[in-house]
Structure formats: C-alpha cells, structure tokens
Amino acid sequence: MTTDTGRYQALHSYPLNTLGRDLVVGDVHGCFSMLDAALKEMDFDPTRDRLFGVGDLVDRGGESPDILDAVRRHQIKAVRGNHEQMILDWAMKGGPEHGRAHRAYLASPQAGFDQIATDVAHCQGETSALIDNGGEWFIEMSCRADGSAKFKAQRIVDYFASMPLAIEIETAHGLMGIVHADVPVDNWSSLRRALAHGENEMCETMLWDRRRWKGRAVSDFIAGVIAVIVGHSPTYDVAQCGNVIDIDTGAAYGNKLTILNLADVPEWLAHGDRTITRNPER
Image (cartoon, rainbow, N blue to C red; front, top):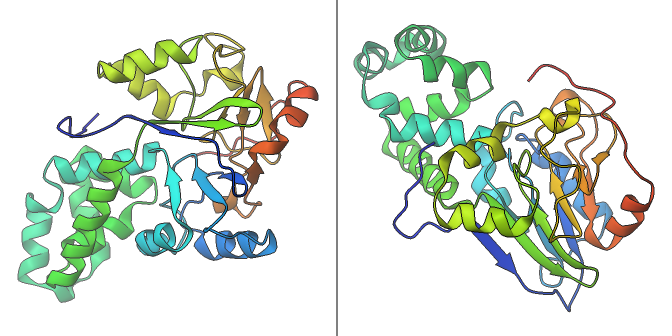
C-alpha cells in the first residue's frame, strides 16, 4: 500500500458534535446526485451536521470525476477505501507517465481512449485492475494532453493521499469508529497503536477484508468502541455482525444509498446480527 508517511495521519479523531447530527454514508461510488437527493431529503445542514463516509467515494458511478466538488459541497469526512487506494497506488507508481499506451496517446489523442485503455491493460497489471474496478475515468483524466485535466487528476490524488484509514467519533452514546472494510484486531486501542506504527499488513486488511461476513472474523465484537461502521461488502439491506455495521447497500448496482445517523446505532445494535442479503461481484 502506498502512503505518504511525512505528515500523514492514519487516524482522524472528532469530538462530540453539540450542534447537530453525525451521519455516515455508505459506498457512494460516484453516485453523487443520489447523495445530493438523500441529504436534501434529510434536511442536511453542513453548518450543524457532519457527514462521514466509509470510503469508496468513486469508481463505477458516472459522476466520479466530480469527487472534489461533492466533498467540498457536503464537507465529507471519509476514510480511504480500496478504490481510492487503487487509484493512489496507480498514480504513485507512475500511472500514465510510462508505457507505450501513454506515449501513443500523447502522439495521437484522437486515437481514442478505448484502444489506449486496452493497450495499457496489457502493459501494466495494476492498470488492468483499475479498469476492471471502474477506474477508467481517472486513467482517461490523467492521460489527457490538456493541463487542466492533469491538474485536476493531481488534486484528486492529493485528496486520496490525505484520507485516513480510520475515523473515531465521540458521540452521546460513546466512541464510534469508521473503517472501510473491517477491523483486523479485537479492540480499537490495538488498531490505534498499529496505525501509529504504520503496520501495512493490517492496513491492507482494513481496506479489503470480507471474512467477517463469511463467518471468519477475528472477533465478533470490537472492544473500546460502541460500534464500527464499515462498507466494502455490498448488501441489499444494512448488515451487522457483533458491533460492526455494514452500510454498503449497493448504490452503484442500482440499489439504495444508506446514510446512517449515529444517534440510531444503539437501536440498530439492539436488534442483533443481520447477515448480508446480497453480495454481487465487485
């Protein structure tokens, strides 16, 4: 995993919100019009309310290039998801700055993106994976000849590089956590220490792991927090295992976008475990 270890903070902490609500949105995947509509329905006010996210703000949905506008508009505070990480890794390892496909594009932009994407896929495995996971919008933006597109692509990379791997929030009910996929330890304090020491293996698990939803979690309950909110594993309805709640309800697959009010978490937990009801191919 690629991160800038200079000033990077893998864990962001937020105090109690005394003005309004704390909301967490599931995997948006570039469906920002859907997010706008949902927040309007909820009378979201960024001057009082805070909007957090479980990551995967981009890819698959057609509005992915508008990521920075959406973040600014709603003041989204999101953890990094595996889709942001794939784009970040691709960009940090050279991205469009190498390979015959990029050279061909600069020499003949009118050749079209489809052929270039095909060529790149054969030249670089990570590019192929990025295309397969809906990241072609970023490759196209990065490979454009005009400077404004490249500047925008770099701003997106900078934003992804700044995203934490975990968020913790003080609430009226106690401390709650957010990670993209799962917590690979049985208590939040251990996660804090691991992130402080840059344990990359644990970070990979936080971005990619789905074992919890297959009955193979390290621990059902994560000590030290009331609940941990995650995404990554798509489901028709909100799923729960122990005190881990999955709110990726498949917005990019034509299903709904879930926004969870953290004030409602104790009520969710009281209902007990809920299994994933859908797991489409990612």
